[in-house]
Length: 275
Ligand code: MG
Image (cartoon, rainbow, N blue to C red; front, side, top):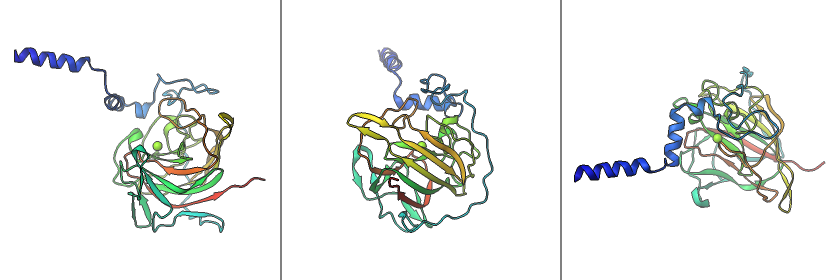
């Protein structure tokens, strides 16, 4: 009888469809976070699929030495090394609470699984300066080492990832418009060193429910142009093609919690007016 029950229980377990977490773990075991995918949708206007395993990775370019860029007079200082007074935590379920990420030694460090950090102020078109570092102690591979992201309007992501010594699919490395456009080249500095993004973002424009202009972005990565006025297809999403959902012209900037430690410092932003 006991044996029958055990067999029945095992059969019931086997009959269950794989759970999302198990599926993701299986993909990671298969190395897809490194190699990429072949079962993803075709990117419109490109010859590649989302996270395409055939897409060439961007060539490496050694950046020049780090040079501090200090904010101009009209910049809004989002983090000056001292406190998170410009930020709030955006946890699961949309609950906003006091920031949980650590501030030490002049930088912010992600406390994994505490949720995104988001600015109290909202922004549309803007220029952003932000520096990031993957700690020396971080371990992992593919999408699982130093994964975070700079998410304009909380939804349009420029990827943050250890990309100097770890491989992933072309549209998933540091400086990528995640899932859409790889960086033109890969000028990433390794773990323990500071990387610098200077980003120029144009918010999408909606008329009612209709998108009349997509979001565009230009990115300097360690002083090297890696995105030159490239478009977002919609909200950033894994393994799928993002779509636009109408939203206000200004929204908070968020930093992604991808359950991995990444540090940030020297964050400032300028609102861009019309001409
Ligand atoms: Mg990310």
